[in-house]
Amino acid sequence: MSGTLFVVATPIGNLEDITLRALRVLREADVIAAEDTRRTAKLLAHYSITTSALSFHAHNTRTRIPQLLARLEAGKAVALVSDAGTPGISDPGTELVQACWDKGIPVDPVPGASAPLAAAVASGFRLDPLTIFGFAPARAKDRNRWLSRLQAVNETLTFFETPHRIHQTLAEMPIYFGGRPIMIARELTKRHQQFMRFDNAAVIGRMPEPKGEFTLVVGPRVTTESVPEIGSDQLIYNDFCRMTAEMEMGRRATVSALAKKYGRSAKDVYGIVERLKNSGA
Image 1 (cartoon, rainbow, N blue to C red):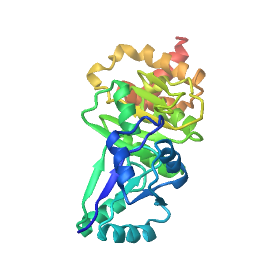
Image 2: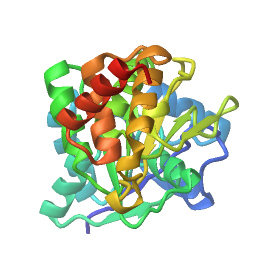
Image 3: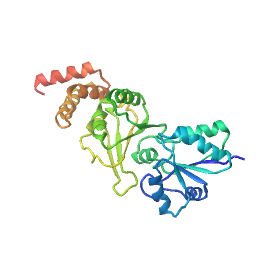
Image 4: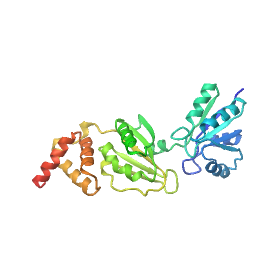
């Protein structure tokens, strides 16, 4: 009789972010497949768990999956964990789970902490539905394509960003999500946890300290019915002046962001800006 693969959620920050069931499974498993054995060792030591761990990460899946399947087929219990949170969500795990299904090996999830869910419920945004994305790509071309894909999602979505790219991402937010609310979550459940919520991505001006891990939540798209009417030409111009001066955004990016915010074409926004600028408004 084959063993069972337990997909175990672990803390995303605070070591208390773990369930009693998860601790029991980690103690009783024959082996723990960990994304980073050194990081997992700290968690195991904290709870006096002596189960042995072996590495299972993005760079060794081809060799490690057959080894883990062999253990499972021999009746062993394997606990799969990532560095933090729930395996398979921007972390290794999906391929092993699929391999178990292909072999008829039982898979048992042990739910718990999840950074995107924690950030989403703290945002106050409507969450039905909620779309979870991973990390934004590093290359500019891939990044633009990826953000355009997210832009097409009308409901609440969440994604991750690294410390060294968070400033770039926040500068780009008005281009893709102008008019939509946004929340930035930093260092979730850790000592220096921080939440910053803005009613409009286009007004982001205060950048968080580029340290720790970031989870961003973008709220639902505002319907055109709730956007100010034509009489908002002055508002559009005021926004343009503020965004280019205070936020140091380029003209093209600002026009694009305002077009999305007010449901107007970029040509209309540009015309409004030029007309009011020349009139001395």
